[in-house]
Amino acid sequence: MQKKTKSGSEISTESANWSANDFFPDIESVPEKFRQKGGVSITETLVNGQLKPWPGPFAEVRSPICLRATGTEEPQPLVIGRTPLMDGHAALEALDSAVEAYGQGRGTWPSLSVAQRIEHVEQFLVEMRSHREAVVELLMWEIGKTYADACKEFDRTADYIQDTIHELKVLDRRSSRFETVGGVVAQTRRLPVGVALCMGPYNYPLNETFTTLIPALIMGNTVVFKPAKYGVLLIGPLLEAFQKAFPAGVINIIFGRGRDTIGPLMKSGKVDMFAFIGTHSGASALKQMHPKPHRLKAVLGLDANNPAIVLADADLDLAVSECVAGALSFNGQRCTALKLLLVHESLADEFVARVSKAVDNLVAGMPWQPNVSLTPLPEPGKIDYLKALVSDAEALGARVTNTGGGQANGTYFHPAVLYPVTTKMRAYQEEQFGPVIPVVTFSDESEVIRHVRESEFGQQLSIFGSDPAAIGGLIDVLANQVGRINLNSQCQRGPDTLPFNGRKNSAEGTLSVSDALRVFSIRTTIAAKSSESNRDLVTSIVRERHSRTLTTDYLF
Image (cartoon, rainbow, N blue to C red; front, side, top):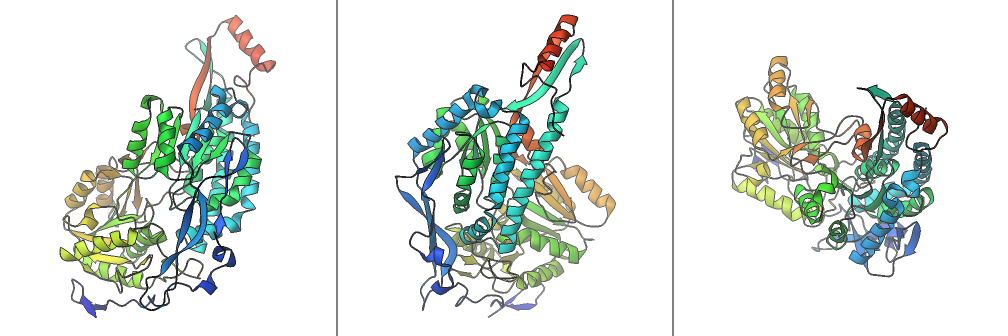
């Protein structure tokens, strides 16, 4: 079957890179441990420093990897494990453990010196690295992340922990100084907030989760941690590492449905800090459950609908390469992915033809296969949602311009390049969070400016072009609309030393290696009038080490 692009060229709708008949493996290709009854099971919870066998019900964990079906049967996702299905009572037990361990700031953990807390985190890092292969394998099987990307996520997380330790030492050195201002001598230190609830996303269930979990811990907070809804099995190999590295009650890990566990935690009013990466609607609902919302400190990474703006003088080779990578890395399941490509009408046809060809050249398959880029999707219901986006766009005049675009088999959805997309289409209005690439044409820059201004999201955008005056003007107009503008490159979070934030409904607070330490702490000042008696008093406290807080000790 043939379809025509806007320019009139014909393409085949059959993909050369994957076959529906033998796309998924057969049972003999599945590792033995995933074939065994129950697969890789998490049967214990970590509460109050103890690994407790879970006596209640369990939830099945299904992989996006399906088993090859025979005849006309639909391939079925493989059950690869199970996790505790905890309830509100069990979640509150974990919270009470964290509250007791914090002890209103007098508990063992918040009372430790910075150097001592760093030792515990370093111990955890050593333990964590010993489980690298197990975690990488579970990332592949549970969320369909390629082996290369799973390795990258693990290694980046380990590097992030090291960078956090280094940055805390820098922060501690700065905080050790006294200053005299306006006749007042003072020292300002960063102290923990209290009890933190940390929740991460399924697309980066290790890295994004640990970018809040580790700063929360190292700053002296105690934590209740709920893993992502998918990508939860990878926590299994790390449970003992958490237990060995941290004192009782400092880190408590709960499993189960969010509606059963998180609601009771928030309603209790005992959560002081809320770290959440997910949808803005979900975050709003949870925050509103807290009886004292003004006392709840939050850092939120939320929705995004990042556009790429391809100007008339853009380097097409570069723009195509960056846009395809930006739209389809991990199948487009990233908040920083490029979700909408706004292309000047003078080069739109050529741009779409090149993007379609680049997508055709991507390799689809299982995450452990070499050179694979496109893999099955872990989220139930996602295939039907993406099909609906494509059908809606086609009904309103768009076409799928790449080979096999929009075809599906089980949990696999082949990327669909949609062109031309208009404002009436769902693909223009909604964040697809998957392998659908909507391409919109514009004739005047005012159109893209209006789109960015009217969007309810404001995480990032990319601009592709070469005219300094034109790009400089766009930067000035759009800088107050998003948290980051990327020039001739895709949107991205890294490097982790740079701020990661957003405007509008895309974020609350800022994360980076250094910003996260500040987010999970509060500046506390000890001050006195600069009289001789007060100076003697402060000197005596410091010199004779009467206080762990008021001290000039610092780390190199």
